[in-house]
Amino acid sequence: MTTHTEHHYFAGLDLTGKRVVVVGAGTVAQRRVPRLINAGALVEVIAPEATPAVEAMADAGELRWHRRPYAEGDLDGAWYALACATGGEVIAAVADEALRRRVFCVRADDASRGTAVTPAVAEHGGLLLGVLAGGDHRRSAAVRDALAEALRTGVVDESAEAPAPGVALVGGGPGDPDLITVRGRQLLGRADVVITDRLAPRELLEELGPHVEVVDASKIPYGRAANQDVINSLLIEHARAGKFVVRLKGGDPYVFGRGFEELLACVEAGVAVTAVPGITSAFSAPSAADVPVTHRGVAHEVVVVSGHVGPHDEQSLVDWPALAKLRGTLVLMMAVKRIGEFAAVLIEHGRDPKSPVAVVQEATTRGQRALRSTLDGVADAIRDEGVNPPAVIVIGPVADLAPEPRR
Ligand code: SAH
Image 1 (tube, rainbow, N blue to C red):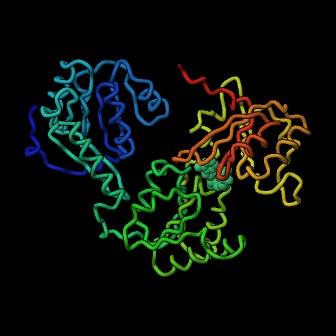
Image 2 (image 1 turned 90 degrees about the horizontal axis):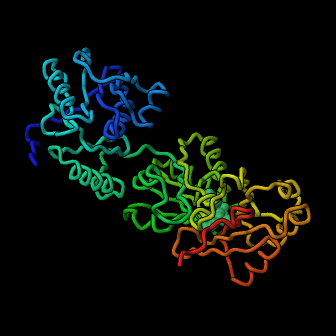
C-alpha cells in the first residue's frame, strides 16, 4: 500500500450550490453522497443502475440521477468529482477528464491515484473532524472513531469552546449507558451541573469530570409535589449563574417524565432550554426482552398507559373500559403495585383473561429479568416472583411471540 499523506493538503470545501458529479451509484457512492448533500452540493449521479438508497435520494429530490453510463463531457462545470463506478476503465476515464478540466477527483478503486481523498469524518458539537491516512480507510476510520470517542467522553479537553449557559433536558435511555443518544452524551460531557434522577443510567455519571456538580434529584428531601418545584428552581438558578445544566432523565424526557414541566418552567424564567429525545423504556424494555410491541398480522396498535393512579381514582385520565376493547398491545408503566386492579378492570370490560402478559423489570441493566403470564394470573405471578419497579407490563398477543430457546 502506498501512503501519500505528505502529498495532501487539508481544506474545507464550501460546496453550497456547486455541481458535484458522482459517477457510479453503488455502495461507495451511497456512503459518500449524504455528506455532499448535507453540505449543500448539487449532486449529479451518473450511472445506469443505482442502489435502492441512491434511488430513494433521487426520488426525494436530494440529487439528480442520470440513468446512463458515463460519457466524456459529464464533468463540465463540476467543482468536485467522485469516480466510484464498478469498472476500472470508467474510473480511469473519469479521472482523466477530471485532470484535464482541473476538477478534483476521488478515485474509489485506488485512492492514492486520485487528486483528492475523502477523509474519515466525525462531527462533535459544531466541530468537523477529518482524518486522512493516505487512502488507508481502515486506519483513518479507526483513528476517527478514537478521536470522536475522546471528544465525547471529555478525554480531549475542548474548554476553548465553553457551552452557552442554559439547560438541556436529556433523555438517558432505559438504563444501559450505551443507549443514550450521541447528542445526549456530548452535552453531558460539556455540563457544569448535572441534575439526575432515580431512573437515569448511573454509569453515565462516572464519566463526568471532577469539576462537575452532580445533584441527585431523587434525594431532595421534600414531598413529591414540592420536589418538582425544587428541581425547576435548581435548573433555573444554575443556568442564571452562567452554568450549562444537563437534566438527565430516564428514557425519554417527555414520556411520563415531567420533562415538559421543566421545559415550561425554564421558558417562563427566560432560561435557554433544549430537549434531547431518549429511547423510552415503554418500547425498549419490551424489545430488550424479545417482545415486539407491534408485529405484522398480530398487533397494529400500541397504547402506553400510566398506572401511577388506580383505575377508579378521580385523578385518573385513563379510560380503562375503552382500553379493554382494544385488541392490540397495552404497555403499562408504573403499574407494578396496582396490577391486580388494572387486570380486573380490563377483564371486567371484555379483555380476554387469558391475554398473554410479559413483565420486564430493570430492562437493559444487569438486573434485567422478564416473566410471562396471563392477564388473570399476572398479579399473583408478580407477587410470587417478587417483581419490583421499575418494570413495564406488556399485555396482548405480542407477549406470546418470543421463540422457544433452541436446543
Ligand atoms: N421517561 C421514562 C419513564 C418514566 S416513568 C421513559 O421514557 O422510559 C417510570 C416508569 O418507567 C417505571 O415505573 C417503569 O414502568 C418504566 N421504566 C423505566 N425504566 C425502566 C427499565 N429499565 N425497565 C423497565 N421499566 C422501566
